[in-house]
Amino acid sequence: MTIHSSVATRLTSFGSPQPGRFAEAKGSVSSSAAGMSAARLRTGTLGISAAKAGGSRVTTDKDFKRLVRDRARASGQSYASMQRRLRNDGLTPPPETHSMNIVRTIPDIRTLDLQASKLFYQDTLGFSVAMEHAGMVILASATQPKQQVTLNGDAADAMPLPPGFSIDVGYPDSVTDIHDRALAQGCIIIEKLEDKPIGIRRFSLLDPNGTRVTVMAHLDVRYQPAR
Image (cartoon, rainbow, N blue to C red):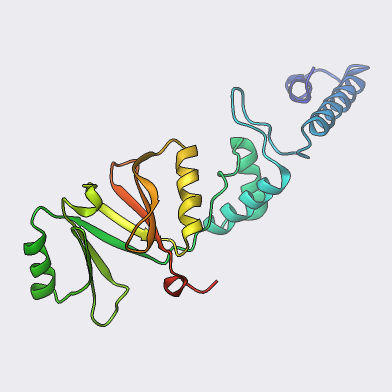
């Protein structure tokens, strides 16, 4: 008999206590507590919920505490209140994230008329041409040169890319790391990882919305951020 059923029996009984009833309840409490302790020892979670029926994987103690702390801080609730809530929900911590030194993001324009587009961004919007190479034009702000727009024509490295944007992650090895992670996660790669003649390492992939993201970094250390 469980704790709850034993207590319920005593509360709903209008007769006088019967001999042995207290001993039965006490034995129920002891056996239930022993069962809980054994379960805690088996899971190693010291009280962390092992998830509801058909639910998720048991969290590690360290990850659970971090999750409780972060959620409590974000919601303004107490640590104890959030801890109880997450134990009841059987939640697990979010997957590991990867910090990356993203230096800048650059809009990429897929143009069908490279010359007309270049004139528009120069004469109308006031950009300056920073570089032209094989059907690709990089335009930059005259006062803030890292503020750039890229125009991609049909001849850009013989690789017509769909609309999207580029992110400069600072270092070539970071480009390779992201490429390997994207492959492992099954992302769609639409431009292979390669060191380009213009002095950058890059590749392109599609995000879940079908938007093209080009990941790049300069090969020349003079154009890389300080480590």
